[in-house]
Length: 225
Image (cartoon, rainbow, N blue to C red; front, side, top):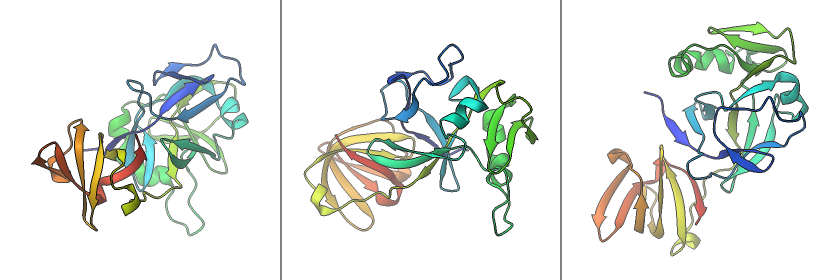
């Protein structure tokens, strides 16, 4: 079962849009970013090898040329919900140590989730697209394709005693917990006045009076409410 995370929303011309939107009618230089999470327009990511990988095409009708013009092919830093990420395409070349590429390492996990792929761009030094599970050269850089971005975390999750008493939004697995931080240990955190979606029972324990104990290792993002 894929480890799914909800993080960020897609913004086109500074407005949040639905995942999967066709952007072919927009001008080639229309600003496109992944920014702070907008309710109901969340991006779903597969957590794999420390990377956030799009679980579906986030945008369609975008050409590789337009991705390259925005530096999406090699990576652009984006701040999402207070944390910094590098947004880029998946690597398809082996690394300098001869280890398999990101695509070769992850395709067995990704293909069952993605289903039948018609076009997903991924690259490192060469320009390729993935079709039916195989990496192939892109012949026409202006041909429309689907955008499956990857987020590489650049910020670490920092929890300190200075945050005690503050209202926080904490990402735990696929869920988000909102509440006030009561206490921190090396193993868990306690929050009060909790508003939460369904959190996996292995990650939390409700202890009454609106309080919840959350396994610290399960927390992957945090920001002030």
